[in-house]
Amino acid sequence: MLKSKVSLEKTSKSAPLQMVGLTRSSSQEVAQGYGPSIQQNELKADSKGQGYQLSYIRDIVEPATIDL
Image (cartoon, rainbow, N blue to C red; front, side, top):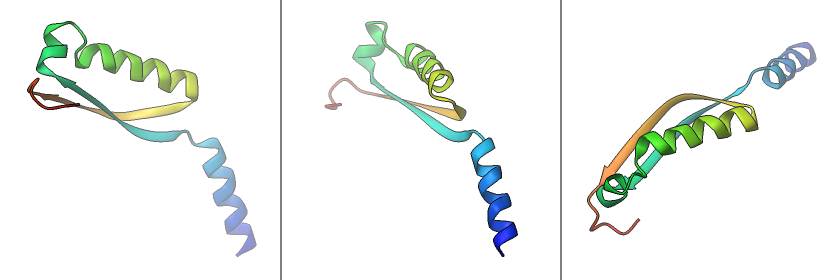
């Protein structure tokens, strides 16, 4: 049992953390140039700096009437 626990700990220390990214912006923000593509680039830069991998990025664009 101890041997398998040590192996699991070694694996988890060497494997990068997998994350799912989420961008959320209003249609007004998209019209002003701060849309999903800008936020995706920010997420990608953050993942490199923090040492995690983005497995997927989900973009949500909602009407400007919704308070974000």
